[in-house]
Every structure is written in C-alpha cells, then in structure tokens.
Length: 130
Image (cartoon, rainbow, N blue to C red):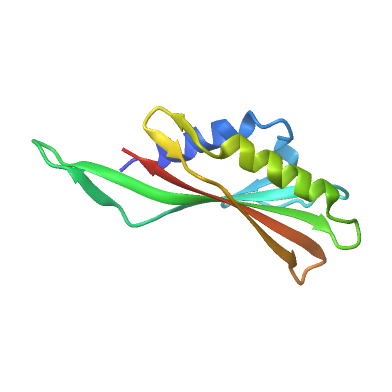
C-alpha cells in the first residue's frame, strides 16, 4: 500500500497553491489553531476501497480515495473570498497527474453555516494511484 506516498504527493501539490499558508491549513492529527481573521482550511485524505487492476507475478493494485479540503470563513464576512479560494484550489488540484497519482475532477460543495460560527465550503477531489 502507498498511503504515505499518496499523502506526500497530495500535500506537495497543495503547498504549490497560490493561497497556501501553513499556518492556515490544519491536517490530520495536528493541533488546530484557528487564525483570528481570514479563510483557513482543513485537509483530509480519505482512502477508499481499492481494486486489482491487473494480475501478473504480483497484482497491480489501484488505490482510490478522496481529498477533502474544508475552507472556513467567519459568519458575517461574506462569501467572496472563500468562493474565490475554493475555485482557485479546485482549479489547482483538479485534473492533475504526478508520479502514479491522478487527481480527478473536483467538486465544490457549499456547506454554509457549520454551526460553530464559520461559513464552510468543501473542495472534494477523487484520486487514483496505480
């Protein structure tokens, strides 16, 4: 399995995004310090149900999953900046190939009020790794 390699490839691509700021991005199992102002995000990489793509001496496993980037802005600040960043991120991550990883067609999901004082938009990108 290649979960660590997949995560590193995806995080490397996110670090190339024009709005990347390590202080504004929360990752799995890291302490969350929410910035006082502006858009911040949480990155989650979820593996899916893999399959055998081909057989030979050793089976070729197709690993699949989804990258979910949750973007947050405080309620009452409008949606202009958060939507601009969601569009930018979807364009940056979607339809991208590196090594054996393919990031596929992105979706932008407007969640709205998250119940904790933030407006939320999710950018969801399925991936496959051969």
